[in-house]
Image (cartoon, rainbow, N blue to C red; front, top):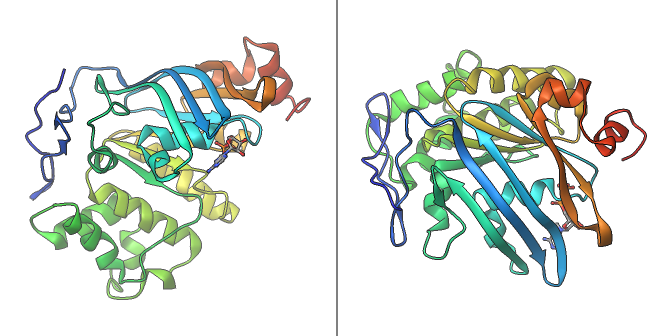
Length: 285
Ligand code: ADP
């Protein structure tokens, strides 16, 4: 079923309605509890079966952490959610990723439209080599956002907990900021496109401990309004910041597979699967 989207807004700024190939991605519902439902996801790189039979739900306005040993497919699964895997020529995806009930990996869905709704923050901060202001306004404009750009820039920088640090130097180059500030600028830039899901691929792994805690605090703040899925190799971080944790492991022929999905506290204190226990207690991985 294809729903109708009337466009959405931040203050007086209006996002372009999002065409998705054969139709329009559904408007966010207010009463739904699950925003993304991943069903029997299989990912191949050429002949290599990298991820096998992964299914889990992502609750709305919560933080879901994907953890597990290196190479078990966490980033691959994350990249499928907003179709970034389309950019890898050898990658092939089977299964369903239902976003507000619509399968975003189906034929006919425009990946660019998906990425406007499901934004992504990468491991290494990657601001545009432009001013702090333009980092937000430029990306927004090319994505069809119209309205008061000053207001949008301020709103997004405030949401990313960066406004107070940069309000007097908006014309300075984004690359002149510290690593932690650059990452928050990238988060602000992602929010400017008006997504409702933000994917984060090890967003703090290149940062010092204080900047890392700021990013974690920010995530906690953002989950009131957004749904966040984070890949982290840092178990303490998953335990500190997430509401739900998905544990992946390596199966036969190094295929990544899901072992356990549980509320975070439960997974770390009372894991249901022996493999989870071995991993969180450091016996494996
Ligand atoms: P994780 O994020 O858990 O470390 P990845 O999703 O990066 O795992 O990788 C899962 C598996 O897929 C690994 O075996 C990795 O080598 C392989 N892989 C990842 N990206 C590519 C790619 N672009 N081409 C080929 N194989 C890849």
